Structure formats: structure tokens, C-alpha cells
Image 1 (cartoon, one colour):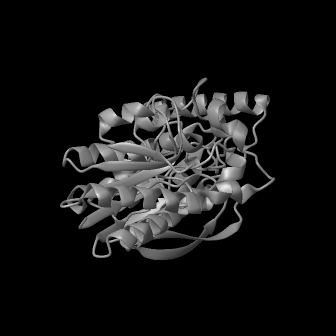
Image 2 (tube, rainbow, N blue to C red; image 1 turned 45 degrees about the vertical axis):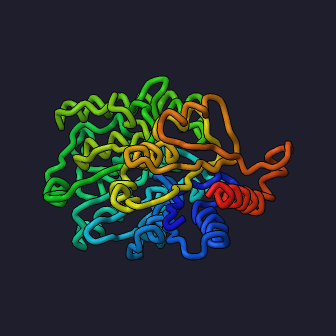
Length: 375
């Protein structure tokens, strides 16, 4: 084997994608010392996305001070690759930041907007935003305020809306933001198709895990509905039913409405950015994987995104996973060559998780031994 590409998602709660890359790479080298191993750790939008980009494409780390969910000062960073900025929403508006103070009615995405503004003012023309792990439900109005969008109440006063005050917005002026975003493209990494509001929208589906009780869910949903109507009246665009508009507390809707942005699959955004199709030329084998492969994986997650690209070049893809769920076999029709679980014994996840590193190493060793024999 002359060339191998290792491009896994993390195993949630056990192994980071960076750790997986390291373990697989070491094992491959044990059996094929001269093999060129290319490691690309993946985190397709949520926490850890920027760190993966920093390693995968040798991007520059840009430190910046912004504000957090409750307007507290935070030291954050984003990745810069040429004129592209990769910004992780979770750094400035992530759920871990609020700890035991969860309240999506009053948390804000303002800090995310400050990061975007900093990147643009420092010469970035392509902005990629990871939408994942947020503690907010403000539809990105906080971030919009940070880049110059003015929101007015019924009395003509500008204010910084949050999830509980979206219905108080009577007028939107995005003229300053348009100037800032001139010649810029904004893409949000989004792997869900939930609408902005409604029973499958941002408030109903995601706000309970952010601290909302039943009454708050109803209020947040009604406020998103009101904001959608205001956006239609003021900006002439209906973002409410765009697939993914409900992502990250309806930040997906805000990206389209206030940033003139697009929502795109996280894995395909990454693969395009790293020029994956060219990178895998001449590759003998691709390792990918995730914590569990099942029917959800088939909707465009990391494994399938990688496999679909590899299939076009007839490159075999091995999926290494923690668990194999229902309908996983359908992945074979989408470019996956084989699927292997790292679990070596029938024990509960609560116990097996502590042996993930050695189990992964043993699985790769077995595969390499088999490949050696076959070759």
C-alpha cells in the first residue's frame, strides 16, 4: 500500500477525530512503513471544528476577544486559510459556556458576529461558519447586530434582541451589513433539515436541551414565527422553511436572511475546502468512521460524504465505527466497501468506552494483517 487517507469523524464521548487519526496512522505505518498517510480529522460544524481545520489543512490560528452568551468577555479563535475564515459558533455561543445557567430566551449570538466581523475586516472574503452545539435561540439576530444590522422596536429605538424579544422587532435595516459583506461569501455548515419554527423547528426540537421548559418552548416558537414575518416584510425573503433554517437556535435562518449566506452540508463544505477530490488521487485505501453508523448516517454525514466522493474514483472505503445500527448495510450502495465495529466483546458502552483506544488499534491491526495476507 503506497497511499492511505484517514478521514474520520469523532466517536462522541470516547475518541476525538484527531486521536483516531493518530491511532490509525501509527498502525498503518507498522505494516506499511513507506506508505504515505494523509490524516484529516473531521468535526463537521460543532465543537472542535476549528481545531480539526487547523490540523487538516495547516491553517493559521487567529486569536480574538469577543463576548459570550451573556455578553461576558471571551478569548476565542478561528482558523484562517488564505482568504477563508472557519468560525465555530460553539466557541462564543456554545452550550458548555453557560454551564448551569441555561436559558435560550436570553442568550445571544453576538460574539459569533464579532468573530465574523473581525475576519472580514482583516481581509477574509470567504466565511465558513460551523453551526453546532449552540445555547441560543435568537435566530442569529445577535450576530447580525454585531455586523451592523439595526433592529428597531415600535418606538423607533434600536436594541439587541434575544430569543424572548424577537417579536418586538418592528423594523430591520441591514444597509451597513450589506456594505461590510460586499464581495464576501458566507457558508454555514449544517447537517440537519429542520425548519425555522413549528413542531419540528428550532424551539420545539432543540431548545429543551438548552434549558427551555414547555412554556418557554411555546414562547420561543411564537417569537421565531413573528421574526420570520418581519423578515419577509422588511427584507423580502422567506427563510422559515429552508431546510436547516432551524439549525443552532435558528441561526441557519439568520445566516440566509442577514448574511446573504447559504446552508451547506458540513462534510461537503469541508471536502470542497480541502480539495478532497484531488487529494485522494492515487490513494489505495481510505479509512473513515464515526461513533455509530445507522440510518441517520445515510443522510449525508461524514462516512457517506467521503464514500460518495471515493466511489467516483473507485477507491475502497473502510468505515471503522463504534456501533453498527439499523440500515447500516445501505451504506454499501453509497460507496462504503466494508464496515467494522471496534467493539471486541459484548459489553455495555459505559464500560467499553474506556477501552476505545486499544480496541481501535486492535481493529486496525487485524485489518492490516488481513490486507498483508491478501496482497
